[in-house]
Image (tube, rainbow, N blue to C red):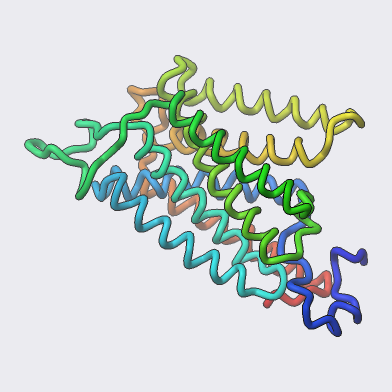
Length: 285
């Protein structure tokens, strides 16, 4: 076992040490679970805001509070727990979906009952549009990374072992998932590629990043964050492909059914990851 995998006697003795290993190893299983979580985040976010007609504003507030609650549990944990970690990833994906919709869209009559003028309580969208919304999110993400850089803390997620480092990590995750949603919705709705075409484009970009992994001059940290952002629009376009009407190029499976299936898949993967950690000698907190 490596230093990043197990607590050493020095860690146990050191009362000032924040955590052992709070974040997972980046493997193929990590990316499969990430895509499952982001696809579920898209379908579940749309389920609450559109299908149940709660609206972008109310759903964004509710899902952001859920994100905060799950994050508190994750931060309080003393070591890596797959259920805690992936629940936070899922909550950032759901919140990111409706945060992006609220920033970029206006209420669509498509989701309104006859005679209604609102998708739910409160304002239903700022109507900034995808370019402006993406520019704001990219700026916020850059600010987070600049602050992160000046703290001197590592960008290698497997080596993050401080409260401040983990806080910056989750801030970057929330913003990157929101940005990825905007990218996915733009590709699906406004680019002319459609849901399938958008997913194929993102797949090609991810394949390009995989090829760059074997180029020594390209930092692995940069590739990780680019892939992390791009897997979100992949999940967004995949979610739209599953749920949107056939007339729009979707499979018309519905948000409720798609979310239920994806939730079962994600929890199955989380249970597998939990068992894998136990077998490796890491008892999740």
